[in-house]
Image (cartoon, rainbow, N blue to C red; front, side):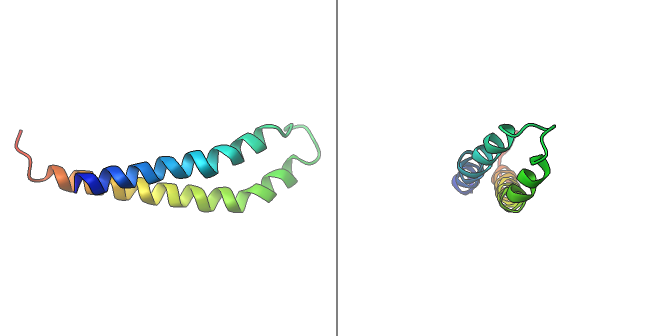
Length: 75
């Protein structure tokens, strides 16, 4: 179960690196004061949110798997 938990954590980090970071970088290049800042966010919002929800789901699943793996451990 530890291997499953660790693998799920790696997937969560992978989603962050492959999807969220590039979208954040693209958004950081837009000036907040510019007229197009709202349009830029709207263009990225759907993709960022889907990736963020997937990342959260994998992180939660990882945490649960790792907690279950500790269930049989004695202090």
